[in-house]
Length: 99
Image (cartoon, rainbow, N blue to C red):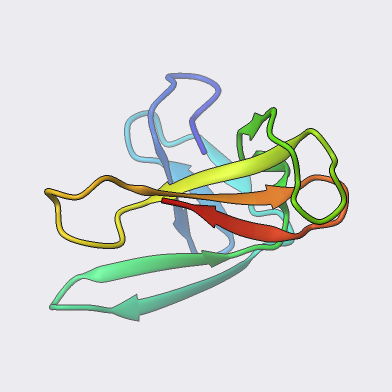
């Protein structure tokens, strides 16, 4: 989430998102936020089933043949290998992978 005032990245702290640049605060929505420690640093994991924040593309769903899906890219193997694309159908929520 970005600050509407200064366009900087906002960070989740307690029950709000806070901009570290201009101190703008916004109350969190209904997302579940989990904080954990990993290698001596805080890592925030946002657990959310709301796909509306993901980008969409035109691709045919193999299950229902809908022509639109949300997509994300993940590095699954070594850095010298290409990323994998994961799609979620906007109609039936079917998930598939394209390497």
